[in-house]
Amino acid sequence: MLVACGGSGDKYSRADYVDAAMANFKSAGAPITTKQAECFIGVVVDGIGVHQLNEDGVTPKQFASAKT
Image (cartoon, rainbow, N blue to C red):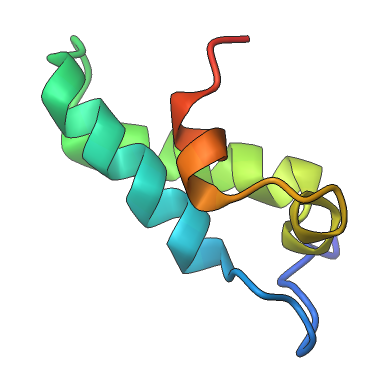
């Protein structure tokens, strides 16, 4: 399976999106471990694709605060 890792022209990286979402997770008091959350968030970012997030103008802050 090929995972989108973002192109060299992307403004934000996979780490930017994961880090932003993890900062939000840590303040939410979720019932899963930090390692589980980081894995899940990484899968979500990979599923959407870093390039697609950048192309659609989604910032890491917006990604981290998305409710749906």
